[in-house]
Length: 360
Image (cartoon, rainbow, N blue to C red):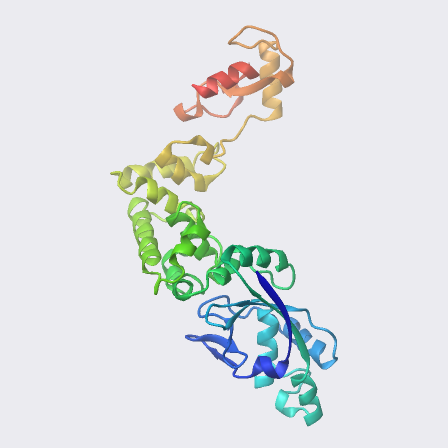
């Protein structure tokens, strides 16, 4: 891996600056991809943006920035995107600082800003080397998410197209899946989640294979299939449907014949069950039958003590006496068969017998 520290000026950085929704944001005579199309939008507040300009006008040092070298010889901003846009926007006259736009400044004031030195680390190397380095330096400012770092490492036509579908508020994926997805497109949550779904959790492996493909049609079509399956299988929408691992469920059960009407009755029953403390887990539970998705309410300390005193410390399975901390609460009638988490349905078993029962 090669890392070079370069010095340049604000003048160099702002040369050829363009901000276009379709073409992204570029600077440095068109050689620097400041914000690739449909990536994270500008998120600095006015106070943060003004602090950048204030730093430069006072000739105070601005934090070092980091760029990734691309195969075509151009660069992409890894850390410093918001600072870069703030500087370029001010020089372009997009906002005023302390009541003065750039064109209102005296000639010497303009030159002082344009000649201000910037320190930039430029990194080139293998994908794995760059990713590791980016993780290490990603410690200041508006931190990049893991997916934003991956987007930089695997930059290319596929990432650009994937961002178009998944990486902007109002993007197609947001319009289709906002009621079923957690996080926000702008921080790459949608893109990261869907890649996890389509490739069994191996995000980097999938992106490495797709990097130079001209489009992201496979990923977009897959997402549409997942959403269509969800809406057909569970047509009655509830707020608890956000953050369910829908892609994982689709991968496993897409070819299974399911009765949506029957499932809806079961969902309604479980939603009303006070013993189910994790309502969004209901959807996974109804398909794979694993109670761990539901976080079934446990017996309270008082209930355990009352059951212990009632049993006089005797395990009803092996007939031996144990101290309270050597026993665990158990549903006499299992929750799955209608047993409630209440004192009359509570018994204490020794650790060994309770483990044995749970394994059956």
